[in-house]
Image 1 (tube, rainbow over the protein chains, first blue to last red):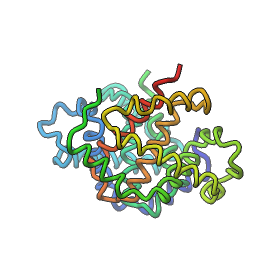
Image 2: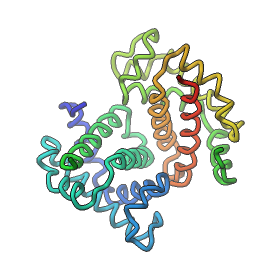
Image 3: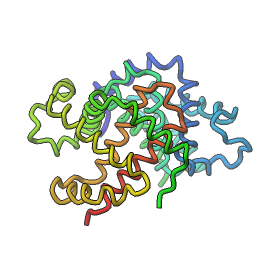
Image 4: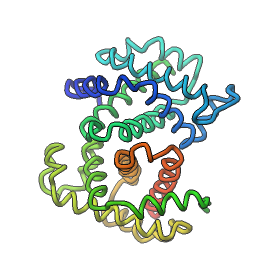
Length: 143
Length: 147
């Protein structure tokens, strides 16, 4: 299920439409993750305030989405381009990779809600494949 | 036993009360067939599924989407006993239709995304949580009688 030429073109085209709102998309996605999948809060026990609209969540959502934006740039070589991030997730953060799927789903929900006309089924499948590929690249160094 | 808060019941009832089945049903099923193409394996007799355009305009798929969405009505009316409400349907999906239960989850995810697109910002995180909880109970119930 690797990205073909059409997938990459669709991802880049769609991303250029939504990139301006990346920070807000990131914050919203992370907020939804912790509300819809409360078990994900276990990764944020070091924050006093883990409520969906808290400054920590908003800021971290922005960070995560920045990573996705970077991945769009490196779409032709995700493993190589995300090497450092993979090492970070593998050795320091050690986020269970199952959670990447949960966050992917939340990102797709936010994209659908905020860009209903642009988030067609064709764009949806390309973005789902892309985010799955990003997740695979991030999990590359886990074992 | 699944426990529903008053708020969750109200959210589920509200979503289904204002649901446009004729619009959402086809959209959810089409999206599932396009985003997860292996699900097309169950639709061999449904005509042209050759590409996304064909799927989106296929009247048999559209009609089936509406039928499947209405299948959720009984769960909405029997939220406290979805497991038993769907026992027969579960047997049917297993013995007659031979559908891999993982597909129920895929369709549920597509339905969530189609509803999110329809409701926009009104589809808050709390509403998403309640809706996904409801769908996961339905998905579990439909897979329960498989053996």
